[in-house]
Length: 291
Image (cartoon, rainbow, N blue to C red; front, side, top):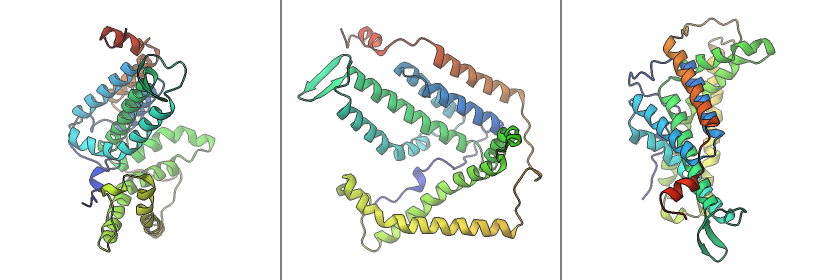
């Protein structure tokens, strides 16, 4: 059975207006809070801390009134990467010293505390990253994110940093993610109508999957280049000029709620990094799993 539902699984770059308190926040506050939260989990190697971070992200998802089922669609695209990480850690980290507590061993393969800890941390981190990045684009339009990034980078213009151009690149990138997914889905349907097979069980091997999807790369890139050229011509036809002399129709005005959200995210980052989280072995001994 063929599976071509790519666009429904792409959550990054799609805006869902629910009118929640998260949607009403200033885009600069959302961007800064997301950066602080990502840094909080990136510099932490505790399973408990990463699980707490995922719970916080899920709480923010509930506050934004975005259905969790829709959020899990974006996790489908990151699942192969997560499975590859799990397989790599299971095969090559079994003999790392010190392995910690050894739960099971079959010849040269063994399940150790170190393996399970890294696999759990990877699962929590990747899931949190996917949910958090999806939340930013689901609760703010690409225009709001563009103005937010440009405003945050504006102080760096005196050092030669092209803030407006970088914000424009970000907006185009986010806008083209669902467009490329839709284009990929259309090409797959066209190829399937000519007898090609995609998404079937016989492509569980990476080499066969690569050979199956290789004919899609060339038309996808050609269509992407064509769309980029059309975008450039449209911008030139409208006399688009970049730089700091451009006026803005949208004026961002922060509120005390936005400042409070950024300060809360910064405090949470400090708590995650500086708190002395107990090792997972203590929790396993308390649960009776380890001696």
